[in-house]
Amino acid sequence: MIISILGIWGILLNRRNILIMSMPIESMLLAVNLNFLVFSISLDDMMGQSFASLVPTVAAVESAIGLAIFVITFRVRGTIAVESINCIQG
Image 1 (cartoon, rainbow, N blue to C red):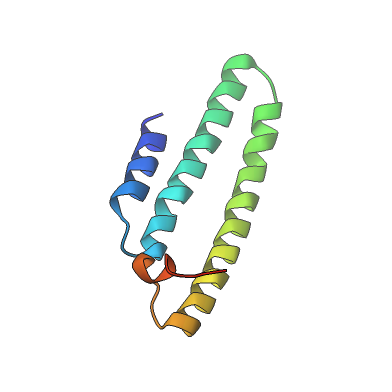
Image 2 (cartoon, rainbow, N blue to C red):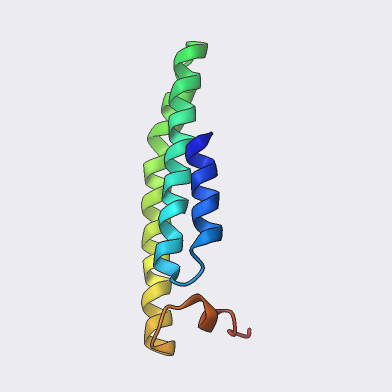
């Protein structure tokens, strides 16, 4: 719970650089992964552990798509500042 709250706080606090905003999202995914493992052990069920093995896959896909968006935004705008991304119309 504390890691999730720190992740939300990190997103709300760091509004300047989009790359730094993606790091708290990764910490929230790790918090979910930890919850899956803890509840799997406490309930003596393997489903939580199987879901916990899928979370790194989702994190890797999210990182790859996010980095592709960062590269395209940097090529078009010349910066990855959040203020310039908010003006994108479409």
